[in-house]
Image (cartoon, rainbow, N blue to C red; front, top):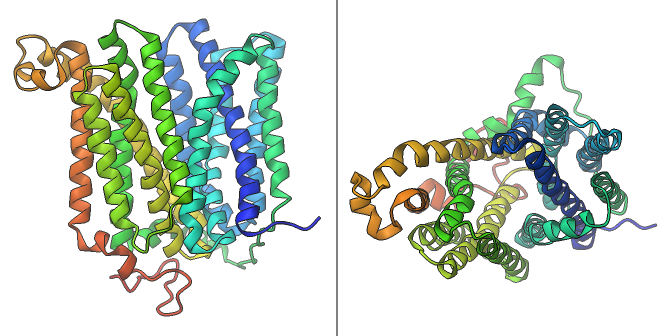
Amino acid sequence: MKQLTGLKGFSVLWAGQILSAVGTRMTNFVLGIWVWQETGQASALALLTFCAFGATVLCSPLAGYLIDRLSRRVTIMLSDLGSALATGIMVLLFLTGDVQLWQLVLTNTLTGGFLAFMFPAYAATVAELMPKEHYPKANGMLSLVRSVPGIAAPALAGVLLGVVSLSTLLLVDVCSYLIAIGTVFLVRLKKRAPTGERAESRWRDWTAGYRYIAHRRGLVGLLALTVVIGFTSAMGFIVLIPMILARTGDNEAQLGLVQSIGAVGGVLGALALTRLRSPSRKMPAVFAAVLVFSLLGQVGIGLGNTVALWAVAWFFAWLAVPFVEGYSQSIWQQKVPHAVQGRVFAATQLFENLALPIGFALSGPLVDHVFAPRMAPGGGLAEVFGPLVGTGQGGAMGLVFLLAGTIGAITAVVAACTPSVRNLEARLPDHDEPPVAASATGRSGED
């Protein structure tokens, strides 16, 4: 059978990833329910997430190295096959009926390690399969891989749990990974040429992605912008659920409404990105999307005091995310040569993933030990910020959103006023432009 290329080939890969992402979200949903019912501890759920993130961060350098040394087909299959194996182990554990938390933590860590391959491999595959004017469209489709399962998976898992066992649902996830692996054989992907590298150069080869970024001020600034926004988004995300529950008297229906409307915003933003013409300059669009996310989204949630206002603000926050991610990732794909993309994208993944647990870890103590005592009626911060975000525990969490949004907006303004970041696209040649070919370790014409 003739293998597909271009947008058709990428669409086949994308369809397989949508299916496997739905399966993964269902697995995460039912495992969260099981762990909560068995332990009654929020810390147990946090441990599962932390270990998965930690494994992704630790495995990112190895993932980047292998992505640039093996074929894209092999590395994509490695990610899906490893995740299927980890989920298959969980199926066997639940079938035996003797499941313990440490076993799930271990398998979740294994899954996180294999997921380190997914983002760099697919980002590099976009640049390999498609012309650069279609990068935003492809990245918009990848945003749908994250947002669509967030709407469909919990509802689907809830329905399936009523008629099948938990182990059967996990088996569905395994099958979704196998189908995703099958789509890889339908697409024509380039093979990696042998490098013939010497053993003593291995360390420099592993760190080539970090050095490539460090030698280009504009890329450093773009990475710093997305890392800060990831950090501020984590600060807000971790307190959204308790804030809304605290302010609505533990009304789970209203919380679900806010979250669902936000997910719809993410889907609409990704769909819009796939339909819009790619702008000649993408950095202004990145700055604008960050401001929408920070001001209309996070600051809006902090200042809101009704379900309607929270839902609108969360909608705008999610609506902006595909534009921030899609246009910034398109710039990376446009500027970084194919030979080093795996290592560069793995490096960006490492820094962006590090920002998330830091934001998660900071937000809780900031609310409990710093803001909450001072946001109580009569407290020092309550007099200043109480009229804006309310008082008490809910007001303290609203203040976190206000702080996070302000930091994000200031960061966007500073980046827009920095010439090396603002003029990144003009100063740094595209990887397919003949003049001034930059090596993976050398300095670019930007400097």
